[in-house]
Image 1 (cartoon, rainbow, N blue to C red):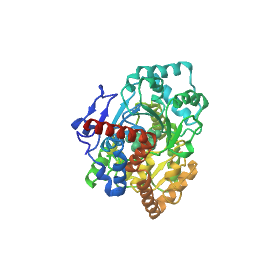
Image 2: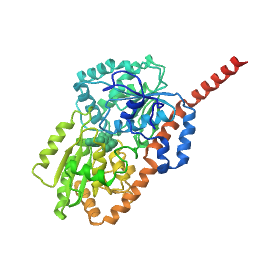
Image 3: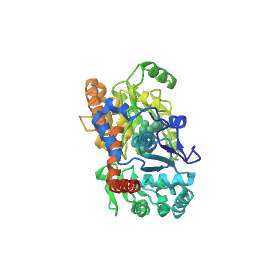
Image 4: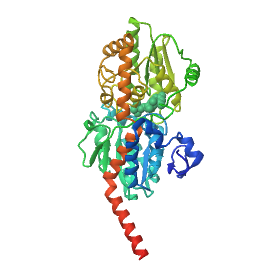
Length: 450
Ligand code: UDP
């Protein structure tokens, strides 16, 4: 259980004072599961390996910093990872940087720019970015062993690295291969201040003067987003959302309303498929506090779908985890038509539920959807529509792909595997130092006893 013994430090937006979070408060942040609860899914050998890697890291202070507590992949990962790191014996903290609209406008430009989109970045925007880092410098003054900067929003905090003795890690959750130079060359010197840069995939390696490491993220199979759902709960949630549990097949895409997720393209796909057979489209998404473009894109998508009785656009609140779980289970075919993708947790979530998935090969989707094995791939609107039709016409194919997809996620993209990879990486980075410190304190203990 994530009980009072879990050393989970929760601060930032909504959590005004840095503190170790205990008991009820910890429980409100996380679901009540323990590492052992994953054993049936991943086997005892992996849990044993986690525990033995964790032995060297007892009391190791790791602080994660990102820019939103909910919405989007990074928040999704941290919600599950931080408590589990605490259970493995680390002192795991999570702080959320406080920004303002101008800052988040700038960082969304950076996000789009790293994904290779044309962006406009002015001198004032860079100044406002650095000013917010300055205002948040108190976040990094503690005595942590490792500070983890997630994505580019908190990267300006590297200016204050000298205030701490910690090692610093930059974790890039997007695909940097096509990054706009104006953005990359502003951020790269900040990355160079870190000890290590972590990317999801080996092909994301960049020319950087620091150690690089590759580690894809994972979904939490026991979270509200992914856990098994009882038939009663399933029906109740569908009823609440106004979604018919029966009727024509449902095509679904779950994603933030973001042009790079191509919701307009999904509507075109749907319209092509509907020419061949009756079906419905569900586009479910929400916003993230660090994504100011969400409302604009949602309006655009609503306008495109206006008056079409077969299209439902669901703008969900950030905590709609059970709802997304149920929608993914309701879907007959899930689509992920991203134009760019860091990893694409929504794909892993659909595969985990054994759903047939049609996805582009953007970024991490290429590793999840192996064409004809764990799903079907497509590049264009027409190709995507063709693959969706294929799956609707052949449910047995969908079931076979879905089962293989679930197994693929179980082996590679599931939380205990991710935790194991984290502990391996930290041991690589700091294990020697930890072992020396332990040996030192043992020697001191021996000396004081003699
Ligand atoms: N998500 C959510 N509500 C939404 C849209 C997305 O909870 O309305 C979740 C989604 O289930 C997934 C994460 O946010 O867990 C999105 O991660 P992904 O890697 O797919 O994309 P990102 O948003 O980080 O680009």
